Image (tube, rainbow, N blue to C red; front, side, top):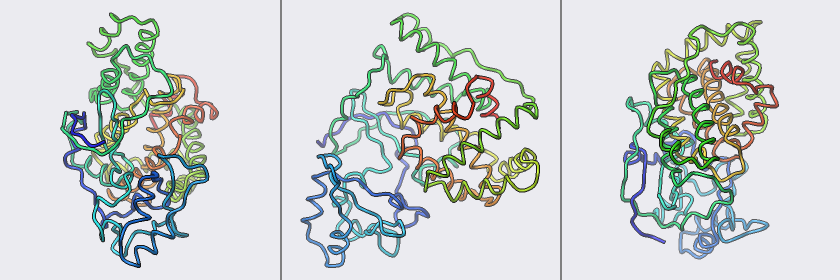
Length: 389
C-alpha cells in the first residue's frame, strides 16, 4: 500500500544517504536476505542481461516453510558476499535495472518503517552510514514529523500486550529524554532510566492515569553515583562479566568475531587486565574525544528504532532495562578494545555497526538480560559497576 503519511523521525533522517559501493562493509555481507513471495516471483520473471539472470537464478532459494512475507532468501556466496554485488560494490540488480527492482527489504534498509496508529521511521545503527552521521551531530537527537511515502503494508498487530494507557510513544520519548540528560554521566543516565522504568511500570500496572501524567510531566529523580572509580575488587568483577559477555557473543556471532577476538587478545596480554583497560580508555578518548555524545546518539537511536521498551516480545521491564545495559556495556568494551589496536574513527564506525548488526539481526535484546544474570550480574550495584567500566 503506497500512501503519504506523517511519520515521526529522528532529525538526522533527511540527511541519510546510502553509500552504495563506497561501504567498507556492505549490509548484505554474511546474511541470507529474506524476500517476500511477491518479490520472489517478480525477480524470477524480470527481463535482464544473461549475466544478471544467471546470478539471480543461483541466488534465489525458496525457504523450507515459506509464507507470503518470508518466502525465499538471496543466499550469500561461500565468502559471505551477496551474489548480486558487482565489482565496484554496488548491487548489480540496482545498477542494471534501477532501485524499483530491488526486493522490498533491500529498498528500505536501513530504514525501519512502523506503520502503526502513530507511524514512525528511523535508521538502523548497523548501517555504517548512520553512526557516521552521529560523528558530526553535537546536539541531542530531536524527533520531527515528516511526510513520507512507503509501499509497505500496515505493521502486524503485536502478539504481546503492553499496558501503555494510550501513551506508548510518549513514554518511550520520556525514556529517551533521560538518556539525553547531559548533566549526568552515561552510567548515571542508565541507572536513572532503570528507576524511572520501575516507577512508570508500577503506575501502568495500577492504571493510575494521574500518576502516569505526573511522571511524564516532570524529570525523574536523577541517580548520582560516586565520581570515584570502583574499588579494585569491583573493577575486577565488572571486567570479568564484560569479558565473559564478549566471549559468549564472539563465539556465536560472525559479525563481531574478528573484532571481539582481537580485543580480548589485547586485554589478555600481561598480568593486569584492569591497567591495560584503563590505558586503552585513554587511547580511545584521544581518537573519539566526543565519545559520550556519539554513544548517546547510538543508544537513543537504538531505543527509538527498536521501540524500547515495548518491543513485541514477552520480556519484563526489568529485563528490558538489563538488556539495554548489556548493549551499552558491549558497545563500550568492544569499542575501547578494538580502538586500542586500530585507533581511528573509521575503525570505531566499523566495530559499532558490526555490534548493532548482531543486536538488530538476532534476539540479543531478548537474551541479553538472561546472559547478565547467568554471569552473576543481578543487583543494581553490580549493574552499575559493569556500566562504569
